[in-house]
Amino acid sequence: MSLKCEITKIEDIQLLVDSFYSAVRENELLGPIFNRIIQDRWPAHLEKMYRFWQTVLLEEHTYNGSPFPPHAGLPVNKQHFDTWLSIWHQTIDEHFEGAIADEAKWRGVKMAGMFLSKIEYYSTTGGRPLV
Image (cartoon, rainbow, N blue to C red; front, side):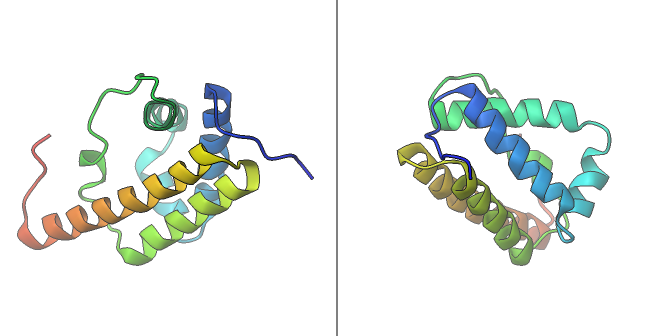
């Protein structure tokens, strides 16, 4: 049994991201969507996710960009986001503890809710994100 640690450095973010996306890729609901869209660009995607979560959780500003637009047209619904959140929480609970781990879970909930709301909005209105 491994000891849980707090999320304090980039190596922790890398463990979180790598473990999470490994589980996502194997998930029967999410894996086919992620693998179809990302294809052979997983290393670049993971690097981007390291920077995103490093910026969000460690307040080390290494990510630039708008996280939502690449997700705007995905064929996903509440079930997909519930599955994503379940894997996110399981991954955090498996490896980490402490205030930043709790914040990571909270931010995941907020992000999933916002992304789902925006995806539903754009799919019903036919609009597109500005950025």
